[in-house]
Length: 391
Image (cartoon, rainbow, N blue to C red; front, top):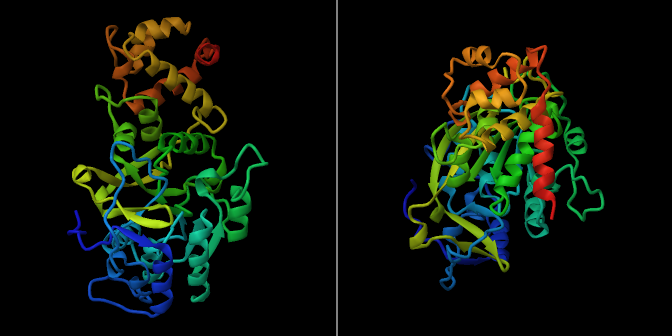
């Protein structure tokens, strides 16, 4: 946890932030700021506590639905950069920052000497970031798009629309084999209004090796809510264990890098940056996590081609988590359910919800090898969805 943020102004005019940046266009370094050589972009252009205070106000925790969040102090941004740089010098690939807003993390990334691509969807912030780009010598690219709305199915959507193929081609990012090192690191905040939808979209892209994952094992470094973090990391028997838990744990190494109190962040509201500091938020945190796709995710029996079948199987199984495994196998017309139980080292009385993520993968691969299995769960999955969708 970082120190007190009581010095932060509660509501700051964006024009004040941008103006402060332009007045302090200088380079600085500080002892212990970062261990690697860096150019020292002044943090004063985005350091909120250096700006004048305005009146007190804040969003209610009962009614809040923040559109976007940003670090409220430079310490949070510096921590993000240090965590991104973990590893030998020069090992960090290009960094794509999603919706950087006022640029607190952007400045820290640039100070560390990293090549940054800022993907900004708000024209207000875009103007500031473009001006910052023009002060540099190619270290920063600024692109008008929303990373979380990339590759839309409806091509009539209003700007900023972006297709991954176009974005990566323009940036000179090429496809690499799945077993290769991480080609790109993406950093940002999952959208607070639709975290779950974004996590599911990323899962489908990952398992099908489409969108960003067509270019290799793209690494996500994201701030996520405590609730969604618990969902994707839960184990059998825990409250939040569900299909999204199995699928993320099977696909990625999930590492908790840092926990930061929600009071350390600000949001953009009615043209101003608003502090989230509130007594009701003192014990609430955002989790900064790293999602690195596993090199060994795909095998001879689990591939991008049949991965949708795996997703269907996991969903159907955990929709009946309190049913016995033996009963589920029988309903699938498995030729020898007892033999399948032995392969999983399970007993007749054990429940579907007792399977760990790696056991779901083992089960799927065993069924793919079966000469008699008919993949009945896919039919059942469509029937269930059609029933739910009917009036």
